[in-house]
Length: 166
Image 1 (cartoon, rainbow, N blue to C red):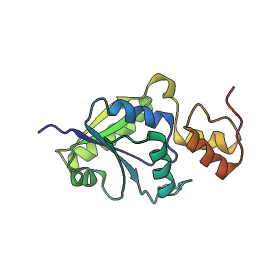
Image 2: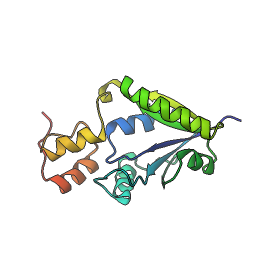
Image 3: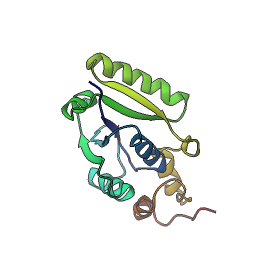
Image 4: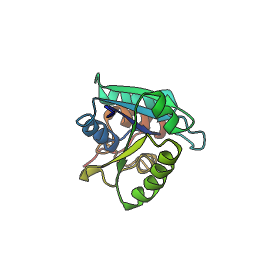
């Protein structure tokens, strides 16, 4: 039975235009996307789960085919609990592919009815990551072209004012 619901997991710390690109393009393929924010205790997050959810919510607006949620534990167990069979992942570069391929193979081994579908990030966002955005913001650099205004405001709350993009 085909799946019309995809789970798009990540830490989204913070959400970037690259993430939003995958969400918007994913909605052209799937009937519904569940953006699942990982409660990963191994990562030292800048923003709380609630802050991340709120930033995503404000950035995506009122899209009825989009649901925001959190999860911990095995991703494939979460995907099955959401009655989905698809994990949607964005890829920026070959280095992403190597890591994501290993995770996809492991997920499929653990839960063979769950498939991972990769979507290439649009060209303008091919280099963009949350880590890079946080570093630029911490150094007071411009982040306008990387993140929506709500995220820029949240970054400035953490790091102080940033420059505007040229």
